[in-house]
Amino acid sequence: GNSVTQMEGPVTLSEEAFLTINCTYTATGYPSLFWYVQYPGEGLQLLLKATKADDKGSNKGFEATYRKETTSFHLEKGSVQVSDSAVYFCALSENTGNQFYFGTGTSLTVIP
Amino acid sequence: NAGVTQTPKFQVLKTGQSMTLQCAQDMNHNSMYWYRQDPGMGLRLIYYSASEGTTDKGEVPNGYNVSRLNKREFSLRLESAAPSQTSVYFCASRLAGSTPYEQYFGPGTRLTVT
Image (cartoon, rainbow over the protein chains, first blue to last red):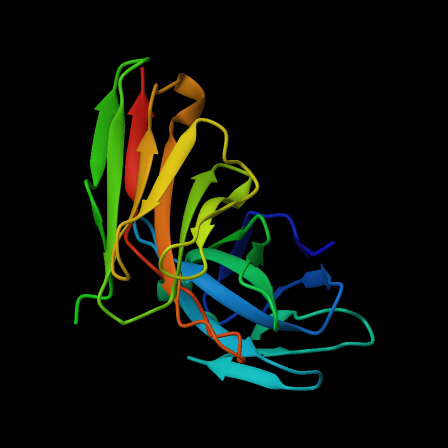
């Protein structure tokens, strides 16, 4: 079956620190991978995506590389800001399917 | 272009009451979804509609019904609310096709059942 496993949170970092949020997946086919972000009181927004192995998704300073050999899609940012405080969700979708599979989310708090 | 809209934003129900959560999208998307979000459990799929006229159960369908009223609208009904249905409900939509287009989410409905 399909599933996504994210690192447990919460994560607290100082401003300008380096961020890594781990995500690994299990899939029966060839999925596309996504990172979504949820700010307090809001719905989820797409942060970045990658549709095939070795693709790198990037947006707003965040990056993630689709690693088929390690079934991973870790989220990274070189220098976090207070405004990056949010919950981050890793997700996958099979290329031939309709469903999305989400991780449990990782809460990030960035302190000044 | 409003994207995905949900009504109401907040609702308090007593056990046994019924209600319908409304969702509409103006992006001409084929597929629509209902999720619930609970602390520590991420998003769980309740029902989805791959295209107008079809609906399918997700991971946690018990206690819910859905209607894909037309291409734009997808409603979620709680026939007899229970405290276990206290949650935040999100509607999402996406353009289905050969590429796995991303989902777009509404702002959510926060439901409390007492």
